[in-house]
Image 1 (cartoon, rainbow, N blue to C red):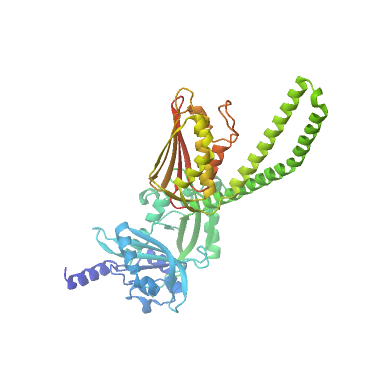
Image 2: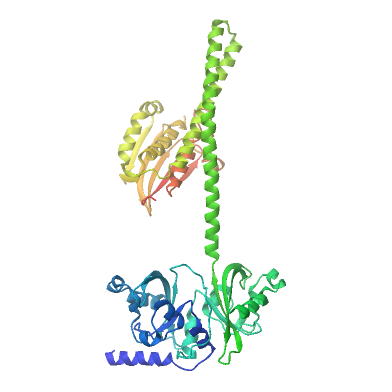
Length: 514
């Protein structure tokens, strides 16, 4: 296609975007809180509204015909970001972004931008709509849609395509009696109603029964007429009966004779924002509970140490005084008391260790060799390996990992110790330790042919102080601590096991540490 053909096509598209006047023109031109304007297929500005003038500082006669890259910082222009925005909007139907933009006076503001590709009835691309909101102060729709601006020359078709093409806001008109008179694709996406299903119905259809019983929709229109605008947030209904949290702005619309002809209504779905705020609040509450629990455990364990030490001393004195005079029954009681004190001391030590793991989420990571850590552990458990007769096989496809050294050693030590503890007497113990990459994780696998676990046991395996075999010593906190350590680092641990066949633990370490 020649340059002349291109220019003719642009002119043809522009002519399509300029026809007759309607109430859409009144609505768009009166919007002060948003810069809403049209671009041709090359990015040149075709229309301008009062909101654009307020936000960017340009008057219509100063900006129409210029390329919209005039609002971008030099680096963004050098990176061809404006061209990229139009390309993505045409490919995907829309493009949304937030970033720094320029006003006429050279000052900057933080903008939320939505660019929507506009197509005619033959589905030929004829331009773009561009909606910009100044979020520098994070204000929400604080000003009203006002009367039509006669200086603007937008047409009915151009305005209709612009409004109908906006997907992130429900923008529609309501008659003076509250019945819906227009509808856009954003309203359909948010509420679930098509234009055929909703136009002509009263807008109270979006409100819960209690709000209707309280005549709240009528109250909204009344306050909008009295004050020039009405803004509210609350639960609204979709067509399917589900609810969403809506930010609503209702503005009265007047004709040239200053007669009320209806209302504009802009609705945005803020459900996700509200849910995120609720989750953040719950997380704060859970964090406080965990902190209080950790402090209680620490305080309790600290305060119990002295009484336990006193009790040990008293028993030692008693044993010395009885000396050889104690009967077998008395000696057994003393032995049981000593065992109970040792168990209590170990339990307190375990609780202290658990709280330490829960608090030390931000321990620094370093590059660690799996082979080096495994070698150190094998030296520590050399006698247990000999006693168990274990055959230890190593398949370390991934040699290094970014992780906390002490935590990695604790994880590998616990898994190897468990494999030796819970071996089967029916066959020689075989342990395979492997590392490999899987998607976004480095996986550490410790597999044995030991006693194995039932499905019921596996479901409770990572619970605190949970033990399934009493023929070997253990505290029941090792696997619990591994799970807490790895989950604190955004990883996970999995187990696969069959009774009298063996068990495999897989620890998934994120390649990128948080």
